[in-house]
Amino acid sequence: MKTFPLYFYFLLPLFLLFNSCTEATTDRYSSSLTSETRSVLLPEDTAGLAKATFAGGCFWCTEAYFERLQGVDAVVSGYSGGTKANPTYSEVSAGETDYAEAVQVYYNPEEISYQELVEVFFATHDPTTLNRQGPDYGKQYRSVVFYRTPEEKSVVENYVRRLDEAGTYRDDIVTIVQPFKKFWEAEEYHQDYYRINPTDPYVVSVARPKVDKFEANYRNKLKPEYRN
Image 1 (cartoon, rainbow, N blue to C red):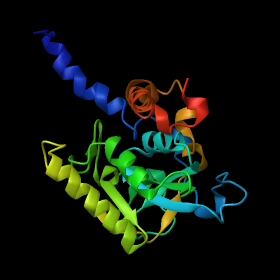
Image 2: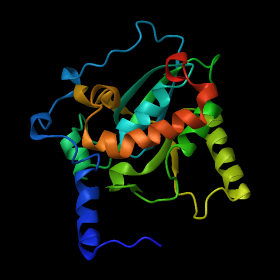
Image 3: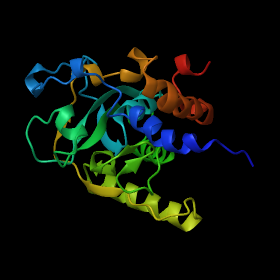
């Protein structure tokens, strides 16, 4: 069994803190932006696309997973599950609101099903940890599926039941299944964060290993550019 010097155990919490989703940004990003000043590039025609909304920890990771899937046209990072209008990242990440970091997925149902999106969601985060994903902790990192129809709710609940019956997780699943109400787009610098910021400490130490593992496990569901 490998042993570590005593100081390692004192430094480890600090390492996790400074490599969390909240701490990875700098003061230059902390300005308060309203939804009117936020701009996200979406496909020109989204009329034929369905939408799905998930919260599974830091949205930088969640966005990177879903945007790699064949049949997904766009993924937007933002906030859902709260009540305050125009929430900002500084408010949400500080736990000052009841929002969760979430992503809105625009997808083609003829290429990928809602069931498949749900399966990917549960496979790419820990649905058994309450208000926490790895180094990121707080209610803003809770696990939530926001359903839009009774059919979507049934898909999620049935899949959770299957996971429980199969004993997939040692602990109970704590994912919240609740009706979708409102999605607020996050500030522009959060969009496509994983790709644009490859040297960010959080991306390097936390997100990239997860995304690499995802690409290896879901190779047959990836867009061609992510299969190499």
